[in-house]
Amino acid sequence: MAFVTGDMRPSSPGPGARFASILGQLARRPFALFGLLVIAAIVLGAILAPWLAPFAPEDQRFDGLTLEGSPLPPGGDFLLGTDLLGRDLYTRLLFGARTSLIVGIAANGIAVAIGTLVGIFAGYFGGIVGAVLMRFTDLIQAFPSLLLAIVLAAIFHPSLWIVVVVIALVQWVQLARIIYTETRGLSEREFVEAERSIGASRARILFRHILPHVLPTILVYGTLGIATTVLLEATLSFLGIGVQPPTPSWGNIINENQTYLTSAPWLVFFPGIAIVLLALGFNLIGDALRDILDPTQKGRY
Amino acid sequence: MLAYAGRRFLQAIGILLGVTLITFLLLYIVPADPIDQILGHGYATPEQKATLRHLMGLDQPFYVQYLRYLGNLLHGDLGRSYIQKSEVTDLILSRLPATLLLVVGSIFFEIVIGVSLGMLAASRRNRLLDRGLMVAAFVLVSAPQFVMGIILLYIFAVWLDWFPMSGFGGLSHLVLPALTLGILGAGWYARLMRSSMIDVLRQDYVRTARAKGLKPRVITFIHVLPNAILPIIALIGSDVGYFMSQTVVVESVYGWPGIGQLAWQAISRVDIPIIMGVTIVTACMVVLGNLLTDLIAPLIDPRIKLR
Image 1 (spheres, chains in turn cyan, brown):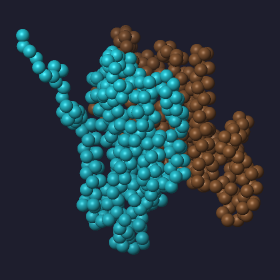
Image 2 (tube, helix red, strand yellow; image 1 turned 30 degrees about the vertical axis):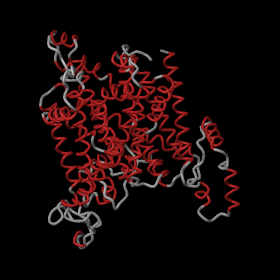
Image 3 (spheres, chains in turn blue, cyan; image 1 turned 120 degrees about the vertical axis):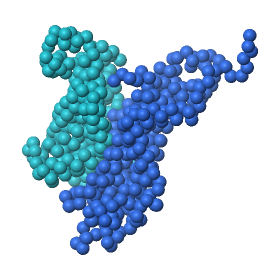
Image 4 (cartoon, helix red, strand yellow; image 1 turned 90 degrees about the vertical axis):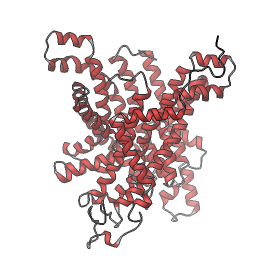
């Protein structure tokens, strides 16, 4: 009889290989691939903005306005035209991508962390802790979130990081509820029972055994959440209580220029298209991830 | 059912109490002094300020102020605006009909557009039209309200000149703002309707109807649609609350004189009683809407377990 030494567990691919496999499956779906490409392009544009942009984002060009002082249409020296202060719109859109991505990823990251912790703790411990956490979640969910975000952003002096915190505070609720339901189911399962019976610590059970099982859900809703966050940042900035000019954000570019809608519609349309594309990209990827990672849904429709 | 409804109702009241507490707390710590807003900066002596502060009860501890606010709330009294010098309840009541009209219009567009797109996609399942419609649905849910609002405004008011740009009046004023809100929700409903329709199309009774040789149009509209639309009907309640909380942006784009605009003006002037009042009224609508959904869902689908 062969004597087996070493690890007897079936070999499972490492996290790197798993990530590559998910990426590969995404790339085979045309819509998800489109989403990946859009996001890759916007991320590259944001990182390389100082080298790609022909001007500085705050540069009010004398040659950027007509003799009457109105913005220039797209074409010529200014690829996408200029805004009401004679600044290059293409440049401002590139730098605005930084704002959108920073807020989208940071705010959503905080929201995912809060939502996951609340959901896991409430789901695993149940009892008083669970009841209190979930009633609080119900409460925040009953709040009109857009109104709450607007009130909070207006009360505190608006800045990039206040916007991040405000969005995170209204965004964590949905994920918390989903993770809660999943954790409730998981903590009844035999493998968790077995861990408990051999005396594993709570932290070990929560973070080594439950967390990996809810990771796909976190990935799906984390991705979809970036889309919502990007839209919320754009909305707050459009209302003038988000990211403040002269720092460009796609929302505040539209806010500054909306009075020129009839004479210079490109000033509203290009940033509008940019916002929709970024949110669409994350929505398409999130939706595809849901199909890939949730085997019960696979191939249903 | 009655016990279930009662329990849900009590939960809703608990949530509303929590909402008032959190809103009150948030606005209590706002760094703006109401006394300065009422008397104007630097015009009143410290004694006058202290007297007014005492008369308004703003020198009382937090819990006293909160309980007094709750007491007034039970009598439908939301306090007086600091800046507009009128009762908040009256201000909100005068604005509420416009917002409710907008919400009803939005739900109408949302259902008509969402259901037709979803039915069309389901009937051409996995074909080019289906794929195209589902991408379109994703584009709709990825557009922020103000972008959708401005685009519709440009196409239909500036370019085609079919509808007025802003303001309040006949039905023609309602179309664009209601379409803006409705079209965004329609994206979700198209997806929901498509999958619900595909589920129903697989049922045995549909196959029987086909076997009997019924016309496809009869099957779709008489046999499939009434069942497939149920999940959407069940959600209408939550839509009322959702749209109520979303009207701030649309009302500001179109100059619609509803409570969203009232809230926005109050927010920019830090008029706390109005902000507080609008938040509570909106939260009430959200909670009532969700309550309605919880109560309608088991009536529509008896398989739903009451918890």
